[in-house]
Image 1 (cartoon, rainbow, N blue to C red):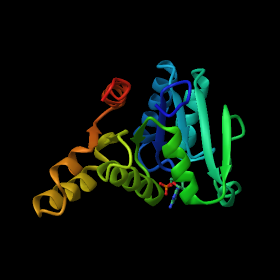
Image 2 (cartoon, rainbow, N blue to C red):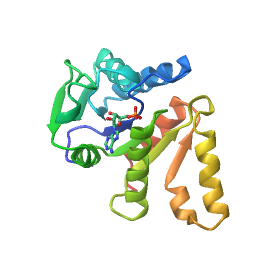
Image 3 (cartoon, helix red, strand yellow):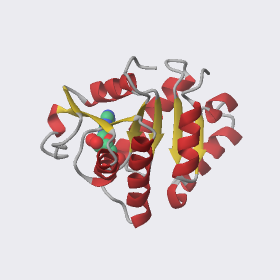
Image 4 (cartoon, rainbow, N blue to C red):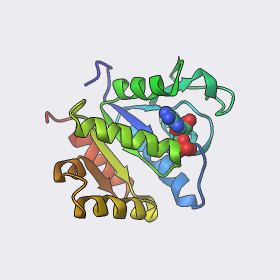
Length: 188
Ligand code: AMP
């Protein structure tokens, strides 16, 4: 655990809604499920896109939501005004570091290059042994099929060790992602 009072889930996802309403529904379901479990949601602190959808659903469900926002993005990404806690940091790197520190496990929904950057960082950190926290990719409506195809290609061509590939858990829906995250609460 991180030392935080409750089990904390770090969420990486788009600062936009994307082209399929299912993405936003998934973000809302995830936020609500995290709140129902009594977990804390740790995310980037925005009031836009899937990030906001998950945060608002968690807050609506009575959950605790911690936002971590770099100074430079406070205006651009419109910081969420009603979070349980807001941490303003200097840089993007500090944001990722603090989010990682505050989280006991990570979950990834559809998103853009920011989401990719965050996913690959926590995944590689786990593979390199910098942390032992679970990383769960939620493949909402097949959004990540092409990425997973690339991961398979890296494995097949000998660029990715089996244990590195296994360090990224993939779920097709929110229910199974929550089950995978819940397992992370048990001693590993
Ligand atoms: P996106 O998936 O591009 O919509 O971005 C999702 C979130 O990732 C947004 O809050 C971005 O500000 C954030 N982000 C983008 N690049 C980085 C980075 N290098 N480090 C940390 N966060 C980032």
